[in-house]
Image (cartoon, rainbow, N blue to C red; front, side, top):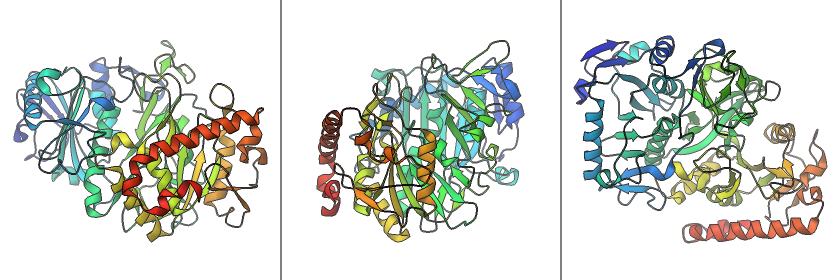
Length: 534
């Protein structure tokens, strides 16, 4: 065994942690060395500006059905087993043993990182990978300790990711050759059988989403930003992939806190990450200049994008590999990003949905009860490419706008959110970035300029004195007019050629909401139960 040391606590080597038999261990390599190692190993190609171009094979999105949590005395009564697959402790131990065998003679890349910008609540995560570019990816996405911190670094959890390892369902107690297994007792995550880098960061989110409610912190699948003028004016944006969460929070007039996962403590909000993992399908330098710029910056990981083999020019419109094409880059590549990753309690909460029915208005103001109702409902349309097998938008309900990442029952998060809204006097909004003028296949996607103008008006306080009308289908308040927005967009029924078809679609969608919410009825207060008609 040889050890290639960047900076590492000498008492915290892989050998110290029981991992032996590997060929070389590369600790905490920086971006230039990781790009170099990735090229030497022919894991991808060098792109324009020194980006790293990579394809992930047959897995171009998450495999949520292959994620397992180990059953123990601790997790038995605390995990939401309806959405999280079980794995026995015995099967996990066999899987762990076999993965350590698989490591023999291989080079390993180690990154010692933090999940959580707030030192009060962060966890140390050691990520061990067999791919250099996976090490580069996670170095971008999590928070990088200083050199001094690395010298004394002790991790709380470890992640071992071996894409070339194939699990055996009969032997390892999993569903397929792909496995993501989380053991909270051993503070260890095992990932095998997939090259999709997003599994690395999503595993860390799952850990934080499990731990933080115990200390009164609300973990959130959301983006966040704060006013440049007033640092006490922050906003959070909930939404699944494809709803505009990353795009809309990257506002040049505001400071970006983060684009994917945050915590809400008694002190304020904080980013879980140190980078961004942005969708690049149809990315434009005009509509999203800050994100677009990162696609030609050194060490940005360009994942599953079609490009010219000679010039390396990226094709942002070609989704032949996947619609879930991505760019992974450190937060400081966004010029207006926060250095601390922290902000005050949010003044505004935005629930983003992508309504493929074309029924919902582009913006609506919610009561606290309605906010909890729609948070627990988590209605959106699953965007093409974010999961295996999804070829076109599918109307779906994802509890708390992040069901795949919720290890605890959803009502735990719903009640935490309600309490936080009450404490912070947060104004709540529902924003539809989906279809207008008809459903998917008939209407068109809501123009991003319209959505930006509506959000700006809401967050800047321009709607505080606006006149609202009650939506006849959902009972929430819709503004009658908004500056710089064509008022026709505000009445979705009026955008349809056939209003009777709209009424039919609206009735269908409301019924879907009612049917879906039946699962939450026993666990919510009466005002939330009545929220659809308030």
